[in-house]
Image (cartoon, rainbow, N blue to C red; front, side):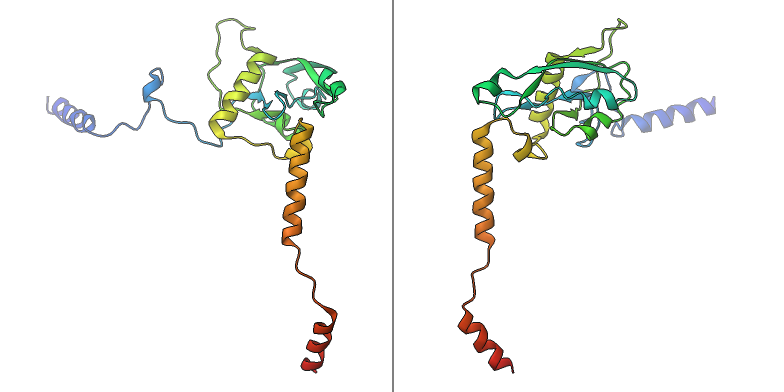
Length: 198
């Protein structure tokens, strides 16, 4: 009897404490995700040119240890018009998220800032093939990730699709480098300084 009362007192003491665990099913009580959290991979959108960064080079597909990705590239019709710098673009792309081991090798090998590990982690389904994400779903995940984190390309001069935006970046870089150049020293002043030091 005395043991039961002691246990009840412990329980009553714990009730008054602040909760340290989040009640997972309730969205209002969930903990926020850390900035460096790695969820499933997502494809990113180039807002400067209104097309995705992915050129369909398939480096990520070849590097994936579980072979959970597949896709196909086509010629970019906007490149022929001169409105895009990307010659090729992905036609369709799919990731089987049930097979993905969230290793981020696809992100490391991508040279085009096209794929990033998003914060998405709640994609369980009842069907075996229900976790296959196609191009549209991957782009939606990527747009959400970009909006939530303020993501910017790591190599904007190289990977921005808009020719006008790249020209503006180059002009800004030129102006910045010219502003940092030291003013030239006159030859006469240099000789006079040498004489004074001797």
